[in-house]
Length: 213
Image (spheres, rainbow, N blue to C red):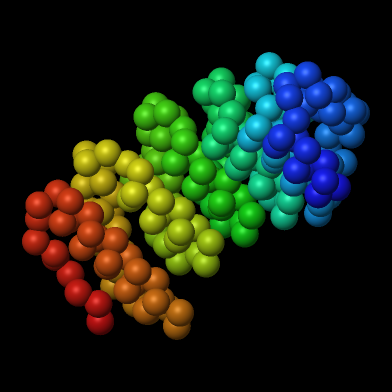
């Protein structure tokens, strides 16, 4: 199998295309396989998109399931990183409406981070808007900051958002710091969040407004 992966990197396009055709009908089995997912990742990375569209289109109906799978999530991340804009958009579209829940899942949280890193500004705004929720809803951001996986997604939001979004998010985050300190595991998260707040305010040219307890 590793020879197959290495061959994809070095053979010419004609041979690459022939090798890829052999995967037809076996894509999902490969994606969910500990070794097979490396073959799919390498195809996405090395082979022109027109030759592997059948691979990527196979995922569209199963984005949520694959995002929560230990091997499938790697392939979805690869499409987000190396795919065409319309392929990225198709994946993000399938995840919209489930961003907060997916951020709390071990494997899917990595997929959401890639969506934030590689999505276009409109898509990023959509994802961030879903995480912020509305004022009369349970505070999604607070839930995410308390979560062992979703707190990394919050960090990625602050890395990838624009200044206006960052200012709004930091304001929301600071209202929850005292609540977070009440949790037995909260001090680690508080320290991390306060670092983010300080870093974000530094970017905005503001003085840090809070310090860790």
